[in-house]
View: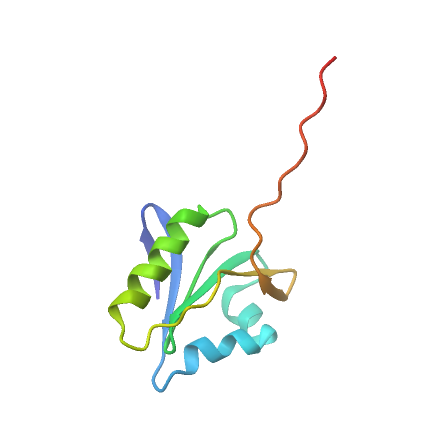
Length: 103
């Protein structure tokens, strides 16, 4: 399901039986579901997986994750994941490029 939170695009997948968070183990399925564009992924509950554009503010995506996980008695305490070039990893934040030295 597509929606927005705080003006940011999000894709929500809620499953039965806790399947959604298990998709984090299947990179190919994540690419099929969310496309080739880099995405951030969070799984605040066993049955909920949320994707957002890679450029999403990390404070916003953390707040979404934590707020949902807090409300669920079985909430998960997982990091933010990054899906980039078909590979899933723990997110280390957006790329930071060094500033040019001005003489």
